[in-house]
Image (cartoon, rainbow, N blue to C red; front, side, top):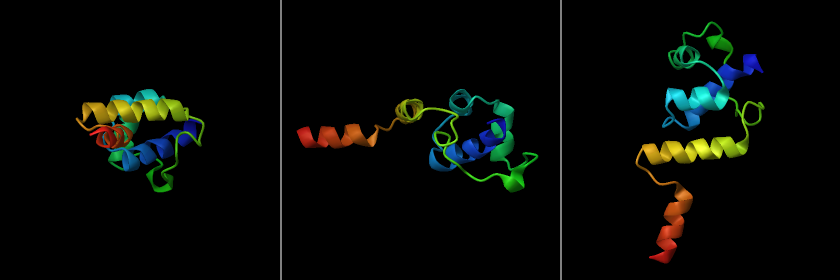
Amino acid sequence: QRQDKPDAIAWILKNHPEFSDAQIAKLVGTTKSTIKSVKEKSHWNAQNIRPRDPVLLGLCSQTDLQTMIARAAGKAGARPQVEADENEAHA
């Protein structure tokens, strides 16, 4: 699984740019220096990194990912889409 972590980091950076480095590190179980090297494409294996879902790689659960998405959206000042839809229905 260790070799899959840069792929998972790349996927998160591509699909959820609102995540902080600390959130990514906690979710995937990696270091901030690895995240930085993947971001800057200076990772030693950068040419072979391809974004892959961390849930499918077995690095985190879908529940953990959804929780982190909700937290990141909250910190960014945005509401998750589900809540926005529910609020509009009650308006």
